[in-house]
Length: 598
Ligand code: GTP
Ligand code: MG
Image (cartoon, rainbow, N blue to C red; front, side):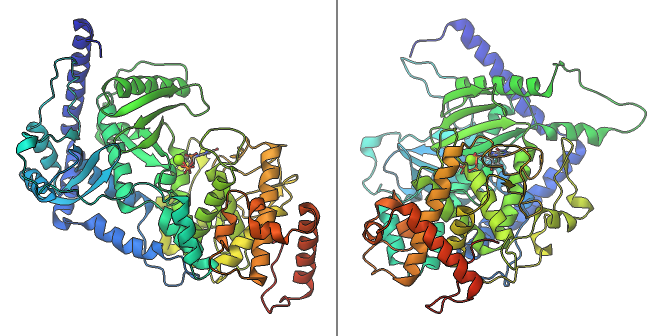
């Protein structure tokens, strides 16, 4: 790397001084803010170790099971409580790049000099990393105070004092051999071979869906790493905007995230405003002198532009920074090398956070919801209906809305409509964002569980049937009212944005992509229907495994059965199912016949 000219280095150090001042400002908060900080610290000390971990273990036990029925629900935390606890936990946590071989015991002893450790884990991602959560935030400052900035002969270091460290062995050759490989937590999804083994070993289609959920859902460690990554980015943004928060949203927090999904985060500057609101009293009102620009969009672009530069130049481990400022929702995209996350940073995105809260609520209401969404998301990915590249495809967000809508349409409904969640809201739940009413009840315990006991197998099959026959040409999907509505515009797929109700979240989907979705849904319904009649021997892919083969049409057992052209065969089958479901409540095998339309 070329040495930077002295002037540019000066500029950097000035910016970093500013950053340090900014961080200093954080500690000089108003009395009210200090009091709440003290209360939080007290709560933490009283509960340490393991409040969040214990809660999560309890919640994992709950959410890991995707059995039918939701009568025995354990009270779950509100989304905002989880976010706040996780954020505070992340602020006490550090990320350390370690030598490949290390004695775990000595490592922990060494770090304990700075204070008690609440939890830790190791993971591999182009090297060995440790995530260490101290009991107290002060331990992080203590560790930083004994950490040096590296100096190399050929390169110059930017002296950024973050919470991302490198641990070096003082004299590697003289280290005793007791240093062995530590146990690493897995941060990636299983291979397709492993997945198929798992699915084929399952006892039933219901078990397959549950196994898929357990295998792909974000682990406790992966979730911690996501909040920690946001917290590290927040430290950088706080150099310019002291008191800001960087909050994860999207599938990292809405309970529908798959291992390996991107990390959506938003820079929340609203907290800065709330400090001044607390101080407003008496005859005077103090305002900051600020620069004005013509629109909110330009504010967003300017802020993201600077933060993007900052991440690029000073953000340890932030690589491939792209500023995508002309998008509908401007963002900075980058890779966080140490965690391996692809990150999208936005600002002014409160509605998206509210959508995440809504999905979290739906995911927690009934254990079948997440199992079904995970399977449909995996199915769509395998068949290239979704993609990590933006384009004319359906997004995971849209697919999740489709599943929610479908579950609202069951009889009795498995999920309540957004309007009914709104009617359960109290004054504290009221939430208006940019003029949009985003109010809904946030306390899960106020929502009556569904009496519907349908199996996951039935729901999966009927999801495919329902959308294989949905009148996409004239109807819109609307989770607010939980019923089909006339499409207000001509996009092939119309899914109403739950909060900005004049918008269509799937406006990007082309007719051909929709057609592909419909055809695959029909084929999948057909396969599942056939399998009920002739359950496969266990060494052949069956049930969900058949649907997740790269092409359902190439599946051997499927090809063997194929006698007529697919379209004709499926049409006949659907016709026969339709007539049997209207004429006879049970089919010839004594099983309940499937409905084709709600
Ligand atoms: P992954 O595919 O696992 O990343 O799912 P995701 O839910 O995180 O989706 P994505 O990263 O594409 O978007 C992040 C969040 O932004 C979503 O969860 C939504 O809250 C929001 N979002 C995404 N697309 C739209 C859209 O078209 N309209 C609106 N209003 N919000 C969207
Ligand atoms: Mg995402």
